[in-house]
Image (cartoon, rainbow, N blue to C red; front, side):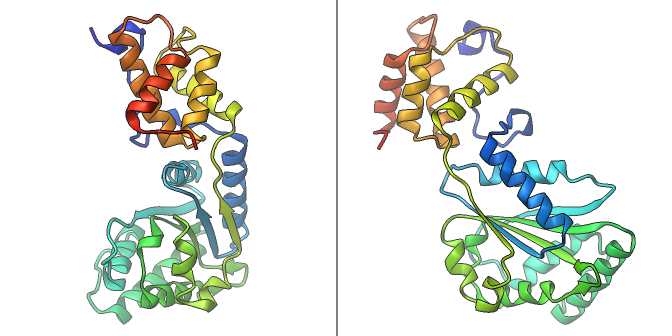
Amino acid sequence: MDYLEYYHLREHPFSNVVDNRFYYSSPHHANAIAKLKYAIDTRKGLAVVIGDIGAGKTTLARRLLEELDETKYEATLLVIIHSSVSSEWLFKKFAMQLGIPAVSEDKVELLSHIYKRLVEINESGKTAVLLMDEVQMLKSREIMEEFRGLLNMEMPDGKMINLMFFGLSDLEEVLSLDEPLKQRVAMKIVLRPFSEDDTRNYVKHRLAVAGSTDDIFLDEAFAAIYRYSIGIPRLINTIGDNALLEGYLFKARYIDEKIIKAVAIDLGFTGE
């Protein structure tokens, strides 16, 4: 027996792997999605989402992508995984995801193919959207200038491509590498941590998705989770997962404040 069987759960409720089934639409996150959709539908060009580590940027990006109807939007998500990405690699990847069959090695020709493909997308009545996660890693003036070049591509009703940048606070500095690009940011959203109520609802939501029909966490536990996680979703997940394991090991029927405090101390979370 493990804690899933002990607490009558079908699956682990607090995995930090992004899974849209577990997405919790807090009022703040719902507002962010609505603003981003507005920026896309009005072809604003460039929108930026900034948040601390574990605040839910990647989750928000994937949720937005899922909500964009494939019959109306040609949308793709690129995740930057290291800081040595070249502009050639970046735009080749973008071209492939746009469906360009033969991706050229020559950057001028590559950008020409991207332009033609964007024209096709817009003339078909769709809106082109490029979501990019971990953009703060692109510490390259050349790449920022290339993005500005993409935003120069316009149709009578607005930009041919909508760029949605997601990143840590360092993203501000990266945008500053090309001041004209920074001035083109049409919308900036700063993700805030959950409130105590959101934290409680988030935990309950994930437990319900995982199959729980019981109140496993006591009210005092929710308050403690919020205190030690300071409302950061990733930390909430880590505390929740460890609390269920701790509860199982000690055969606790409910997760109370003492269990939360014990795992928080083990994890080094001070709640400050």
